Image (cartoon, rainbow, N blue to C red):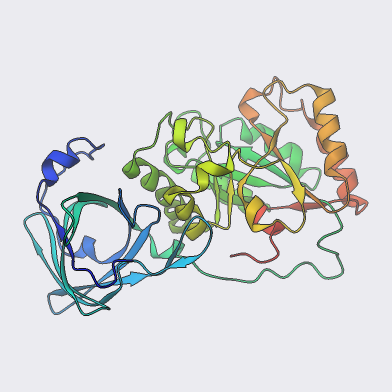
Length: 385
C-alpha cells in the first residue's frame, strides 16, 4: 500500500497520544522478551492503512527478534498484504521494541512499539507526510489465527432445502443450569454465547458447566470478555473480540463465531451493514466465519451467504416476547430453505419451563425431519471459512 515510499514507525510523541487512549494498568513497565514472541493484531488508526487490520508474527533466534506479516482480510473479505515486509530485525529496548525493516520495494524502514503486557502502542510516520499515524494492537492466540476448513453437509440431507434452526443462549447466567435440562430432555441443543471474563463470577455458570454442556452437544461462541456498556476504543474492541475468541480456544472450545453484546453502543452497535464497512468489519472477516449482530435479518436463505454471515440477526423469544410473535417467527423458520436464529436469555424467564411449549414444537419438528437443529451458526455456511 506504501509501495515506493519510505515508511518509518517511530515513538515520537507517543506518550501524549496514548494519554488519550484507554490505557491498561501498569503501562510503561519494562517488558521481557518472551511476551513479544507470537502473533499481534495491529490497527493503524488513520491514513491509508486505517481501513484494515495488520497481522504480525514475531519470532526470536539468538537474541534477535524478527517480524513477519500475516495476510488478513478487509471488510469486503479481500486478502490484503499490509506494509510488504521483506526482512526485519528487532531489539527490545526502552519498554518496547525497535525494528529495522526492509520492505518489498527495497526501501529501509524502522518500527517502534511501546508495550504493556498484551497491548502495544506506536506511531506511524510515512516519508514525505507530516502526519503521525498512531498504532494500537493486542497479542493474539495462535489458536485463533485464520484457517480455511470445509464443512461437509450431513449425508442424504439437501442443505438448501430442509430448514435449519439455531437456539442461542446468551451470557451463561446461572439460570442456564435450570433451563438447559429442558432442552436436553427433548434431545435439543444450541449455541452458548459466552462472555469469557464473566464465567465463574457471581450469577454466572462456570467452566465445568460449559464443558458439560458442550459435551451434551452445545456449540460455543465468543460474546466478548466483559459484556460491558462501551463505545469501543480500538484497544477495547480488539481486546474484547480477539481476547474472547482466544480465551475460548485456550479453554478447549475453539470457535469461529462471535456474537455482539447488546450493550455495545454507537459505532460498535452493528445494526446496519454500513457499520461493518471499515476496519472493525475487517477484524470480523479475518477472525470469524459468522458475526452475529443486528445488521441482518434473523431468518435468511440457506446456505448462509457471505453478505448475511456478517451481522446475522436473531429473534429474541425471552424478555417478555409475546407468544403471538414467537409463533409467527416459528412458522417462518419452518419454511423450506431457511436458517433462523432464536435467542434466549434464561435469566429473563419467569420460570424455567416458560418456553416448554416452544421447545416441544421444535423437538417434534426435529424428530419428524421437518427441520434440522444447529449446534452453531457456522453450520449454515456452505463452507466454514
